[in-house]
Length: 220
Image (tube, rainbow, N blue to C red):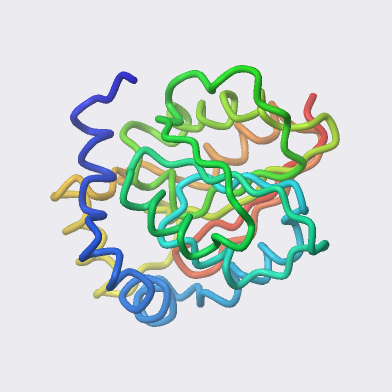
């Protein structure tokens, strides 16, 4: 697995200690009061589009897989992340689904001989990847090899350009970018829109605070 310094920095912060604080700091405080996209909004999207044959990419603590309502009690669940701590914590949290774990860099080619998934989610991943959004969205091209013909891709990402940011949001985003935790100083809705339009026959993007919530289906 090839990992650049920038890619490594974007995920290295997620030690088991930091993951213990993640749900409170990111999913409760930051989402509601700083990014102005409360976690229930993201969970609502997850509930709407996650299938019973689902792959989650950039798993965090496994919160959304734990809290969501899958459409069936028989769930095939895949977890994909570069960070081994995230994979272990998430797999333990959703052990009831006996998840398949993929220790993978999404900027590389995907593993072969994997049965396709009917839905793939990417929440809060792209703003942690290096480069322009138009460049790091190549991850979706890679993941499309694991998506069934009738499948759907959805997720969320923090934008820097073209969204309203409070004073505290500006400071926190600048701090995260300086530390290499975020790499989103050029991320904008237009780049996301152009990419999804070129790859999928149907897509939508909703801006909630600093967050872009997106869905795309029916690959071209």
